[in-house]
Length: 488
Image (cartoon, rainbow, N blue to C red; front, top):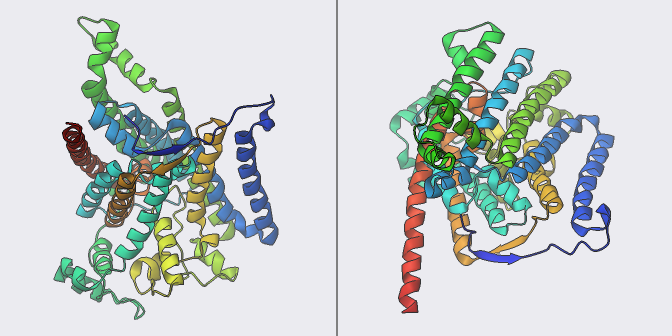
């Protein structure tokens, strides 16, 4: 794939005198880590309970490093697959999902699991379609945009801004937009006796949430089947059946449709047999060491994150970080239930929606007369937003590794890239809200914890990405033809 249009400002420098710390990039990377470490110590000196927030920070750093190391991005996976027929990134994602599922199963058996299954419904596929279409034009998924921002890509910064504000605006829209809500949603929402502070009849998303999503059921496959034995439920049902076997099937299909012909041709195999195909699948899996290592690292750390958060919740006797913030005297940004968004595992987009809402609320807008912010997630100050710091950690972790690998470059986007970033980010934000999650929260973390609804999101995202690739290619062809006409 060729680079996106834009202006590159190369900040790399000559190595100069020998020695690790004499090189500017290394000093910048060390300075970032030192600032995070000093900030962590300062926070703990104020109150040791800030360790809960710091867990998000440091896991964010680890995610950012692995993402940057493997160039790990679902937008790249979809685009590379449909545009140039390269399955490398898609295979890496399957590796990460499988390993995460094994670690998540261990966490489930330990009893410290913070995961909550997603409600199963049509909204997941529709949201995935919108989200998948958007990522093709931004050049990065939710996590990909974060790590690319850490590499100095200003276009990705615009994507993050667009995602943040599009979500915040989308969940508070009313007026003519309410016409999209069926009467049954309004009836169901009102029957639930919502608090007076919330105008559930004045917002499409509130009606969608209370009148539709809350009437759905979410469950892991083991719970659906009524399996009570924790080992059987976690390892055999949720991990093996929901995650590993489907991932293996996907890897085999990727080999059959995108890798087999090239492998047979390269190895000069005239009549391939089963062992030749097995060798080919292994070659495909190991074709990019960096992607495979990143997948292993992301899977392991994502599972460990769930376990550590669960232990801290048990230690402090809390269900949600909002309880701790209230006890510490930070109630200003909490919901009416004294809660904030606190997934307990790797998750993206909701914290960005809170960033956008916080800016808008600071400007005088009422952002909490709704279910999303007012009842559930709150609008905390970014300085005490734990998942928000995870996203910041991803940016900083990617920046550290990009500096160390001499891959940090300030990339100033062209006007075309700015438009794609803003529009694509808008679609990603809307898709994430409709699906109640993004490529991480609605797919990666979901299927890895035994919730089959994540495969529906992947199906929608891949379909949306396929359409996006086709339209993007048409746009490129049209632009090239225009250039040729002008050249004549």
